Length: 222
Image (tube, rainbow, N blue to C red):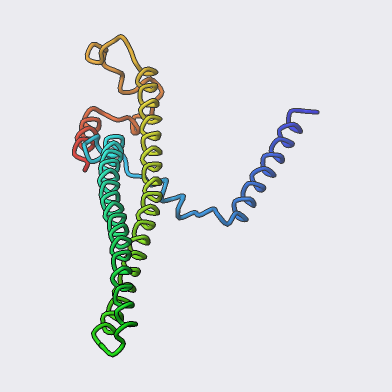
């Protein structure tokens, strides 16, 4: 096989591969050209490392504030649950005392049926018993809802732990990168780097004014 035949064969294989890639991209419904162009047109330089752009610092604030608020909510829920339990116990005690009073009026009413006061008091005791039972059910329901809310709040703690894990990974990567690019030579002691080397096209070379303008734009970026 001659060199020309080999070049022709390789050219045909390359064209077939390009056509296959284009067909796959065209058939891929998830391929969004507009989205791809938007990602390619990312502004440069990136925002300066000010307080509002320090990602790990913000994540630390979110984790700390989330933990503080969760603790406060847990305290509030515990107070509500304690009040609901106390209300339930008081309702049970009041219901028992009311039953004894109702039994007294029942005996009086059975012995003196013509006295309407005894009958009225019996009806009043029955109505109060219904109200006390309702209060007891509401207290029990409130206590149950407090327990459910505490279980839900456990997910907040899980989210905080996930954020802390992300922070730890990011800090580990930061330490690794700092260690990887570490040097014994201070930057101020380094010789000035060449702006361009032989063979560079002069129209694409960045001069000192361009570099200073780029640094100024980077520092003033908000």
